[in-house]
Length: 290
Image (tube, rainbow, N blue to C red; front, side, top):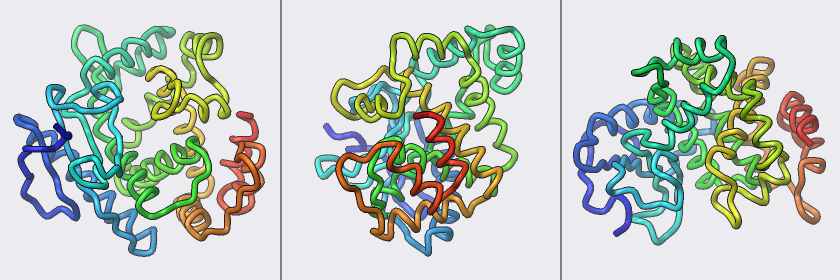
């Protein structure tokens, strides 16, 4: 059975359809409220473009995905309940718990900052407040895919979605900015995690492209999150210098059809384009990552 089939529909003044599994109405309303605000904001930035989407909030029992429960996704395939679904789990599950536990394998000062920002029970982290914001990341993918952005790499796709999320929070929900940023700040500084990923996992943008989570021979979910920490810090740096114009230029250039790839796109070939058309901060960051 496809995810969302038989789910109740959430009634409200939303610019998209909202469905939820039994017992998930509160989570669905929270996700729909912030996604609705972000939808209006991003549509305004992107010349009024309004993607036709549905937000689906599912508990673990009804979860249907190649991804582990807890990892949200956007799907535009025709074999789903409808094209353009943004799927969010009703709770974090084991996936987010394991990420929190891994982050606490860190020096005491880092653990203290994490526990202060995401207090949970028994000294563990409650990442639900951060997880709620990831709805906006997936909404960014909806704008990307349905807006027909011509993004030649998976890591550019993730960069766009993270930039959309960060820009909305920084401009419209600054009270949530620490919730968004602390996990990525501490994640990028976690030397234990960094050593393991560089020794036994993937760490370059070329490897991300080969082992993207939706493709052949995917990297581990934790490795994927390691990349997301770094991409998130890069887009935050670009926003701090250049503001929301970075996101607008990103959208305008890659939607214009001006990008032409001669052979396989890679970081080295994309850096000059980013520097010239989108953001020097992003371009230099990608160049340093190469």
